[in-house]
Image (cartoon, rainbow, N blue to C red; front, side, top):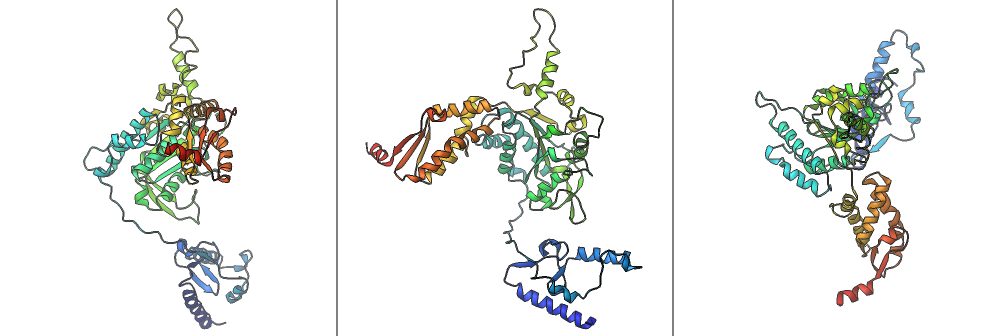
Length: 468
């Protein structure tokens, strides 16, 4: 096949491909890297059924150019006719196109659109029970942060970032608070886990992967991502390790690497991947206006606080007892920066998190309120599920207290509530659809404690009650 015939065949292939793909909703895939045309850009058609992206083509050309003196050095290279490749491919490689999203007009951030702190807290109150101090701190910090974003550097007084460090026992609502806050403000939110982060070059996620998640949450819109919120959970897992004989690749070095992110810098971020590599495009994200919220349970921090507080005890009649703070529920609220440094957080890292606050441990009364009061309370979710079967679900006060008591025993906070309810609701959700005559189910304390069953009321009885 001479050059003229080959070019004619390529043109015919292009025309056929265009006609074929007008209405079928599929797109071509690169023969080498298998990425679709929507990600790689315009593909180059070589022969029937073979398309290649410009990036792979460039790499191929570079390989030939570097080894042009002796092509036999290239491993596995054999000269074949491109037209013969179509016999090796059973069908043309294609992927289904994604439906294009309706583009919403980009809303400019206006200082009047930012809700005042009392309005932010009132909205949080609808979803989060208790934690009054934490909600107040977050409302003010977020309000000040977005005022800073809107005003920028209009004069010589530059407002610093109000990054936060949230300390609280497991199940106290750290992640839930941040999720609710991002939903209320309608800004992109990325939730990352610090346990997988390591120093660059080691197995694990790079520190920049935190921003990759934010970029993905903003649909790869850099401008929108630069106004988002990043929540880094399990931040206590990157504390300095006590063993100093080995390189601390997932502890102090991660804290050092995060300093530029927290303060504000131009960061090269891989798009659609957790680490930088040759096949992934990079984009630049400025973290100056991104709000960082770090959270962690800090399980051994209470021992550090006790040690500091017990140093104040002295001998004599007015001395404090050594076990004075052993049964104190909210010991984490007495935390200081010195305690966090002793725990293993470096001072430079803490200096970039100026707002430090802790959440309360959940009491039995708070757990009962969590069950029934929030807008999307767990009980309301089950009541809605049974309402679709036209059955009323009622929990009496004794049942709610029994659930809360069981949750307190598990010592995993509000997370235990869901597990307990799933356990005893299993039989009810299985049996109710069998009988169309059931009109109401009342959950009692006896049923929760496995000493009795739920109270079942038939539809006929309910009708008599309504008439009477």
